[in-house]
Length: 104
Ligand SMILES: [Fe+2]
Image 1 (cartoon, rainbow, N blue to C red):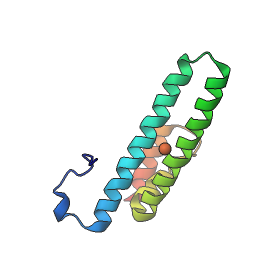
Image 2: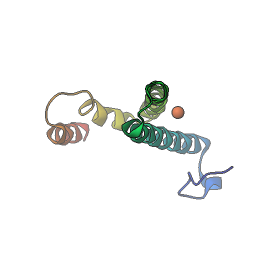
Image 3: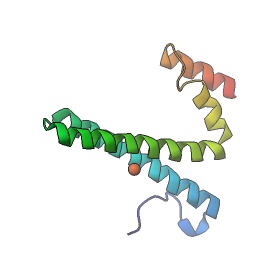
Image 4: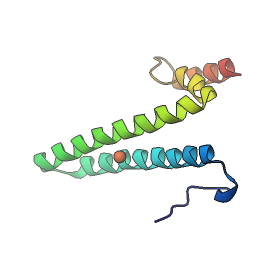
């Protein structure tokens, strides 16, 4: 089943851009799955079911991270900004402002 992953006419997009768009869609789907498991875990009382959901959510962390790394390898400016924000201690907003300025 086709998805609505292209914002522009698909036939006019390069193969590289189509792949990028597919990976962006994948990243969104993995993030959604992480959020869905978070909601299920907040309600589930059965310990065995919770264990399975926690395991599944960890898989989604891996999938999200692989998609993100693929995209970052193709967008060097994105990686530059990310390096100033992700896994950096301190105020997130201030780090983002610094990272944005450093990437310019
Ligand atoms: Fe996944």
